Figure 1 (tube, rainbow, N blue to C red):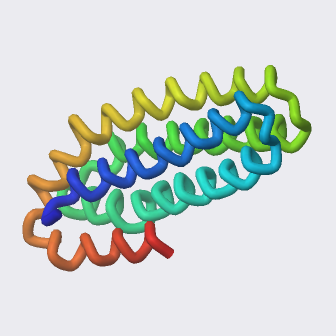
Figure 2 (cartoon, rainbow, N blue to C red):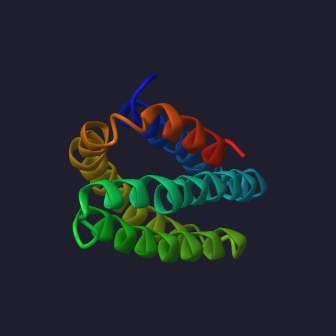
Length: 147
């Protein structure tokens, strides 16, 4: 894995897999497993967001001069997803399957759309513009995400 697109898309899949496990736990009424899995999911997503917001996006913005472009849109979507994740977590703790399902469905749709934009537009742009920084940037992203 020697580019930003492959690494970051792979982390999207890792987060998605954890989310699927939570959905299965909720469907089978295993609330403790669901809450524990959700904590793992939320932590993984927040680490991913943090790596993007503190490392990848600033490097891209500095290199391209684009601070009001795709990275600004992604930051806004991150904030919306943070709110949805908090609402879903509260529903899980309350063992409210209906409330959780509504928030989780909205979160899932938003994550899918967000990930598609990153994987098809932003990450390839990062690979193109940050090619001279990838050897230094990838290990930093890996460390930030795999804390």
